[in-house]
Image 1 (cartoon, helix red, strand yellow):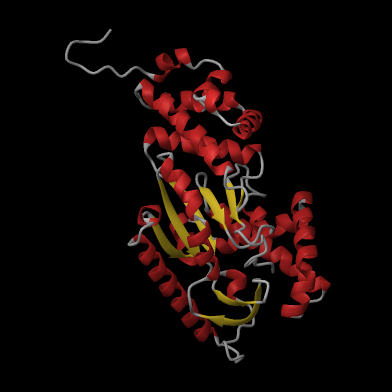
Image 2 (cartoon, one colour):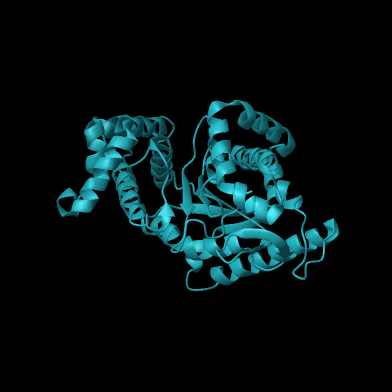
Length: 354
């Protein structure tokens, strides 16, 4: 009973009298079913199969156990989820969408929760130093410069439609662009643009220059017409990111390296990366098959180390390697959604196969 002069906030248990069954979740996610296109109807059926709506219903109840919210917020949150999911499918020609039901489930739950609570979703995008590239756009590691990172620039261009889907559907986010100043990136036999071997001090100077130039480019975007999309983004070196997240990268790397040497699923991904990279790494790094396989294990273990540092919540927007990107989630118990920006030209554009 509403008391005179007081606004009534029913608890979630009471609100869910209209959202009791899994089917009700989809009615609220896609309220204008009659106006959906034939393609959208097919997409809705796909999501119904992959998302397990009963889990979304349980998530609503979990949120409701700790807070009282207005009825319309649940309806609006589910509508936001449905609109967002339909919008991101429209980007599939240039973006590889989250790979499986577990990633999609995580995506839907995070979008729904942040729509209700207003707490921004963390978005993570790692990016590489300014390595030289061959005629096909792939890194050849023949020289290291200090200009804007190609992968960061790829994100700035190809990531706009995805960020626009968040903004259109009122999904708040905060983004971190993570500069790879740790691991293999620091161990490649680097040379300058004139072919002269670089010292470790030279490499650090190039890294600092790329970090500064990429940060300047981000600032330009934040002050430009797309400023609202990048307003909540910042750039952070990977070494600082590990400290921020409370992760010891060396210890975590040892655990992940063992995983890719001994776990059957890890070994399968190593085989895949080894086959994909053996020819190009023979050409650009002079590696034989045994050396290439060893480097594939190291590369995947480093990706998985960063994957552990992402923590329990967030969305990964990757742009560097469709194969290695799989390692972010592979050893994790709870998967995070991964979007891969393949771009408009080729999935291999700028690919960082090591």
